[in-house]
Image 1 (cartoon, rainbow, N blue to C red):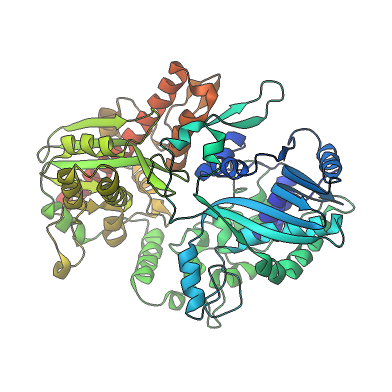
Image 2: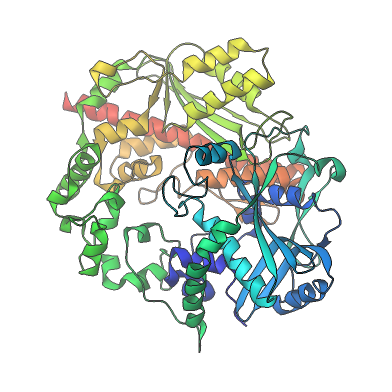
Length: 616
């Protein structure tokens, strides 16, 4: 029997049509590997830490049929007092697995564990000053959008439990991370291991540390959400009923509503079974698509309704169907008009601020890129949740104009906190001279975080902290009145201000910019060969062409930042990757990806330099 799980409910809340594609297993851009889902944001560690608070709880199996698991849960709940981990609730087609379920007679505590921060001090401050608390709009009795998915999740579970146990009193609770708490256990993340059960093939999470000590860890906070659940229950019940109707008499697809959010749909894939194409029909083939417009979701009509939705409803999906008057004023509108103009003309735009940037940089030039992760559970005693873990950098350096590019890199795959060594190694390469070039603000943010951490964890290195503060000072090239003699130039910001190519299709990501230039600039492709040591076809982006490699019996590839972060987390916590050959293989993939990120900056920068020189 097909069931509507709480994850199904969440997917359908985003878009009811997706429920059909999910149930029918349409191709998706989302990874199917359960390991990646467990590693996401360190959620598996948070859940295990929460369960350690209930040492007498009964751990129920999550494998096998849903019906059998629900029967086991029902049998266990026959006891008047009991605590269960992974209880399976099944009522009709509605199904949910509860992280922690406590029964005391007719009273239940349903605890949903989330790797999300809850600032108790801020919640109390808002309430004191007339607000409604952290879950609510400041002056309105409406749940905040950022908390709604979590609270709807809990509400869905509560409704099933109440249907199974009429007359029961259910206390819904969110177990969250306390940002004010400091970790008391050194190296706590190393005490968690994810492994694949050889008998069942499913994943299991093991805690290898002192369970009694870890159960006293104060990183988590439990917050009652009964008021929020009561406010959402009617809405969730109504939506659930509408979704369940899609299952009868057989699975049906909800009528699609076309919006600008379809741009990022996970079912927007190539091939015959494309959910996006089935929803959009002939509009899926319109080029250039309105979905390509920069910041398209901001546009509204005269009645403050999303403009794109109205266009799509009337069968218009072209970028050129957008009325110019709808774009308004300001930087975003200027960028949008620039995109439409140069897309129609098929030309690239080079602003004079590129000339300014080329003139203001100081050699040597250091093109840097970082790979990082934020683990919910801190590495060090005294650190708060979601501390930055900077595990890799790549740097291409050019000593003088027209000179060769030198590549250096650093990667840390051992257990532990790498940030101080990361910063010291970077300083040894970048030093005190020259401009540091990045793509977006990430690198500056990471170095700022590291400097802040050094003050509490490695307070003896004040000199390194001072260097970090100098390194992140921005070099401005946009407005002469704000020009400062900083070191760090953000090339993504420069792109938004001074460059556009039709092939970017409204995106300012480094991958989009490089792909736009790739097929039309043979000099750029030749430089790529020199920097990366391999050829790449003119019709395929270098990121798409990054070679995969065998790792522990499977073929793996790293072609974007999230995959790099997941690779690092897998090496840290997957028991199957503890052998040297698997770690070495992941390390090689990480090095190649991070190297391409800095090589891509070099290639784009060199393209701009040639374009400015040609313009005279």
